[in-house]
Image (cartoon, rainbow, N blue to C red):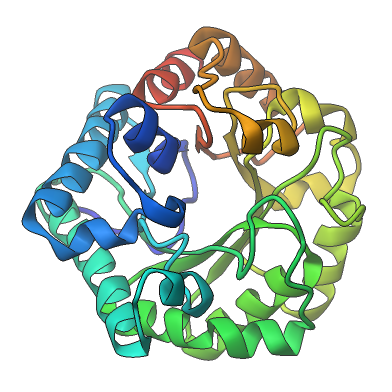
Length: 301
C-alpha cells in the first residue's frame, strides 16, 4: 500500500454519493442523513467497507490513485447531539472512521490512497443557516480535526461549504493540527455559493488568510458552475464531486425518489471540465451518484 499525503501528480478518483447510495439503492436507514453511526456495529462497518471497495476496484482497474474520504460528513457536535452522541462518542466515531479506511488501504500495494478526514458543515449542507465567523468555525470544528490528526489521516477536507467563513475556519483548524486541508464549496444553479458569494471571491478570500492545499467543488451538477470557471483562480481548483441531477438544492431537498441522471452524460461533463480547470486531478460523485458514475468518469478520462 502506498500512501501519499495529497493527491498530486496524476489522476485520483474518489467515491460517490455515500448517503444517497445507501438510502436509495441499498435501503439503509440513515437518520439525519448521517453515515457515521454505521461504524458502531459490525454489519454497518461491513457495509461501509463494501461501499468503498467497490470504488477502489474502479480506481485500480483504471490505474489511478484513490482518495479515501471518511464517512464523517455529519460527525460534528450539532448533528451528533441529534443522534445521541456526546463529545467522547463523536471522537470515537471519527477515530474509527479513519481506522476503517487505513485498514482498507493496507490491503492494496502500489495504489496511492491518501486518507482524508471529511468535515461537513455545522448546519444544513444546502443552506448557510449557521452563520459563523471564521474564528467561531475554527473553534467549532477543531476537535474533529484534531481526532483526524491523531488517528493518522493524511489531510482534512471541508466538504459542502456554504460560506467562506466556515471553509476558512476549517482550513485554520487543519493548519493548527498540522494537517494539509482541502476546501470544497457547493454552489446553487447560478454557480454562486448559497449566500451569493462567487467561487472566485470565495477562493480568493480563503487563500488570502490560510491557503489550503487546493479547492474543490461538490454537490452541484457541472452545468451549474462550468460557465463560471474562468480566471487565474481556477488553477487552485483541483477536485470536483458532482451531483448526478441538474435539480436545485431546494428541489433535491423535497425529492422522494433518487435522481441518478445519466452516468455517461455526467462523465462527459466532468471530462470537459478539464478544459477549464487546468489542474483538475480529483474526480468523484456526490448526491445521486454511485459506483456506476465513478466508473463512467474513469472511462471518460
